[in-house]
Image (cartoon, rainbow, N blue to C red; front, side):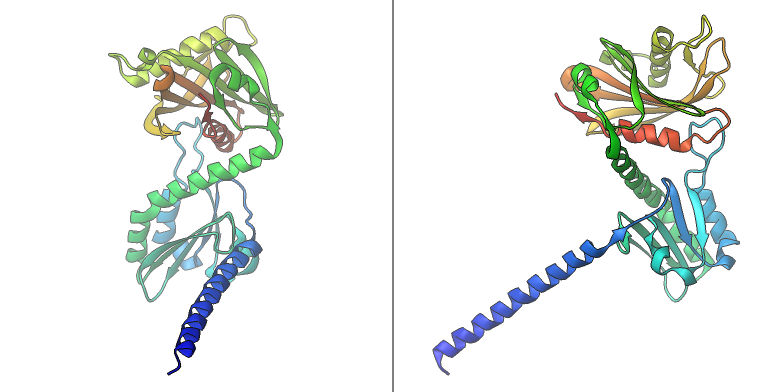
Length: 333
């Protein structure tokens, strides 16, 4: 066989392989490019499951896990709002929800997570089982991971929405060497050398963010961390957060013990505390979320706290907005 023919044949094979690879990559890019924007309110999940399963033990299991009460709120509110739809309508606009859990009883058991399958951003979780017990088993095994995944993506979605109309974080940068994504409506209510109070007012109440720093031994000493956090925030409240009436200031409510969790923010050891605040000698109260971030480089605990006042109204999404702002933190020094 002619040597030049063999070389040409090999060249054509390589060329066709490259063209095929590029074509596949272009196809993937085109698919991503044509994905429409997902829809849905913050902290909402679309549950696609047939009525007979939703109204039985499988539905009970889903509600128990995904609509469990949120820690730290004064009134019981669900972790997520669940919107149930039959599987037969899982098509078209129904597939555009940002958070989807699809549950089906059929010929196989399994679990699968898809990202941006029908829209973007989007998480779709498929829970499949041959029997009710097998579906419930999958839910038992995977619900914690699903919740963690959805919460993380909802934080990002909230931050994206906040970025559409930003308030300057210059004062935060100058005083504490950090950046924050502060959304529209927030204003600097109090500015001191070592303390910032940023507040957004609305018709039924307000959201607040506090930023300050304390020496490491304020949090880490021979007492329990939760005691130190409560003592710290009560002293800050007495110094800076006062009511309209004389001799009133913010304290940690005694009636409900705060929840404390170990976590990390920006790779730094963090204590997350959730509880209820109240005004001493007054009747105002509401939920708070406090993050004590250990910043060893600057020999401090950086404290970022969000608290809300919205009497007789839902508070979950207000606190979630505060959490989203706090978790947007970027250390600049």
